[in-house]
Image 1 (tube, rainbow, N blue to C red):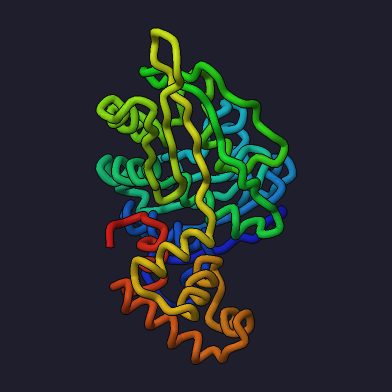
Image 2 (cartoon, rainbow, N blue to C red):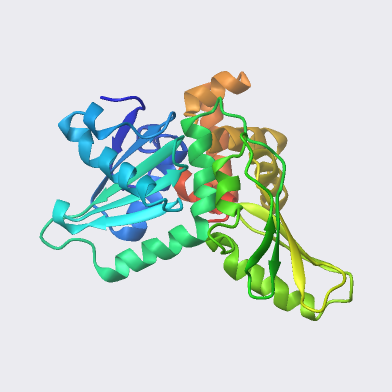
Amino acid sequence: MTGGAILHGDPRFSVHDEHSPGALGYAAEVFAAIAGAESYAVRSYVAGAPSPRACDEGERELASLLRDLQLRDEVLPALVVRSRTGGAMFLVFGRHGGPVAVIRLDVDGARGFRPAQIAETRRFLDEHGAAITHWIVDGAAPQWQRSSAPVMFVIDEHLRPVLAEESGADDSPLHALYRPRNGHAPPLLADTLAQLIAELETSPRGAAVSRALPFAFVRLARLAGGAAPFFLVSVEPARRRATVLRAMTRYGLSRREGQVLGEVLRGASSTEIGESLSISGSTATFHLKQLLRKTSSRNRTELTARVLGWEGA
């Protein structure tokens, strides 16, 4: 095996830790349910994808897939369907060069994934890919520190970038997702930016409009002067602490429940939660059950989805 731990699982929704291996496992279970997959496998590479020549036969296909995506300079997250492999769907998150993570979904080779399942999976990826990237990268490389600086750029009324800052060495995968690329606004923000521009047209002169998304806070203001309208965009990536505080307010969580929620979002097991918070495993399980009840969630996967805003509560 090459670097990076591999985890296998099934698409059952479960509170049991072995069915929810951290943020990557949560996302795999959600995507498996959406796509109607019969099984899934996940893998993360902290230092970037390995060379296909350095892999054994079992990993070569995955390494070749990552290499091809990078050679085509495809923006992540990405979805690839390969029917010739027996109905396999690959979801790739992170950034080229790492950290990068892959979810492989499988169905019976005789039927493969139906077009409607692929379309629904792609829609979900387009809407929430940045949020999932945020939590997957956190789990894949917890020692990697994200920059808290917002991403800023200027667009015209047709969403075409006219000015953008250069990427930094400490940019996170989220920053890369939010930056304009090849003369286009970030695909994950295009619909939101169009809505904000429309709102700004009916707002008082000099006003700014904003939108709180599951994965970021977006602010848009019109620049003064000039015949053609130009807009300054500021995107601040979401952070786990802000997510927990928002959930505590929304669901009326106690301080201890907020602490447990933070550990759950980190992918910690009940035992690890107890050790981190200096409480027993049974007490951690009790608080987890309270979290599920207050958020009307059946399991950890639904809890995570609701708190991160992947679905309406």
